[in-house]
Image (cartoon, rainbow, N blue to C red; front, side, top):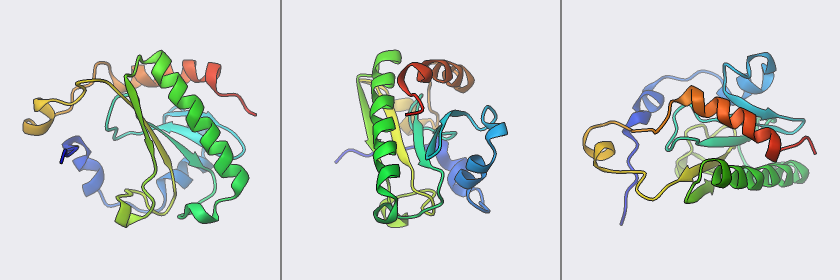
Length: 164
């Protein structure tokens, strides 16, 4: 069995949270750059994960505060799925990703860090993107800084995602 260790996320999992961070982002479009929002429309927003598993880890999040997929409006689900597909294409082309992890952790029991507001993870992956330093040195190595990745994706996303 292989294990994915993410010690760089310790700050996130040990910090006491109040309210819903996704709802805070949804309600404050004027803070999109500060919150690393890449795209926003009538149904959802796309944001970079501040505690990524890999460089370029993004999430598609419905504007509606909802904790279960089965009650999400069908047109919102289809829209989120469509955007996810476009984001996969973008990450493969613009980041030369060898693969992409795509998925949702629905509920605390499934590993959701923010179980009260569903969200779709999209993570570019490269062959050899995890190594000994992650496991033994409590350190994650990214090939570029977070802000540069955000600026690149903010520019690139316009080519892939439109308000349709």
